[in-house]
Length: 100
Image (cartoon, rainbow, N blue to C red):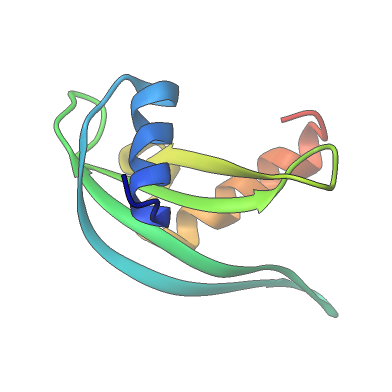
């Protein structure tokens, strides 16, 4: 089996939300806070079938142990209507609760 970021993200969507996703696109996102880049990277967009969302945005982020990356998978309807909005919502949630 060949490993790819898309397949890893697809597995994370299944694990975190119980949904199967179909890869749509990859979007580069840079989110900043005054004076800093808060997050920079690629957000993978997957189409999903769910009453709560029609897509899922997913990306990798530094894990809490700072050694391993984690995959964040956020349903589109719950976090906004764009990859950047999903990342922004995640940054805000991390600021409110560092253990998220």
